[in-house]
Image (tube, rainbow, N blue to C red; front, top):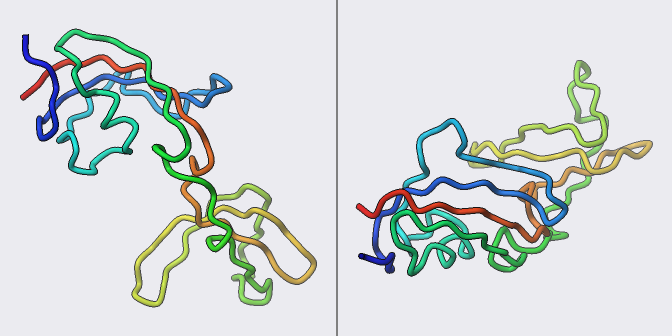
Length: 142
């Protein structure tokens, strides 16, 4: 039986959770996730996790921070003056917002802190700084 190797296109079902057991994503009730192994379409630890699996195999993969979304980057925390916030927006701690850069690209940020004159916005990936656990089932090697 064929085993997954670099460059294969695979389809998997998965259940992703934090190390405390909190689920953050799952393919349950959806089509399997399809990706090309080694092409950077998924995080490195997930890519590595499917290597050598055969169709029908199931396994649990523990992915360290460095092979997931990396550590939180302090450079992605931004102080934003409150007087530049639209008057109809009432930012709350943990609120997700969208911003755009000078090139017009839109990106997600989270309100990380609220001070008297400014708010701190966090542009890190929501899973940055987290070790992840995935239960993976290989459905198909194309």
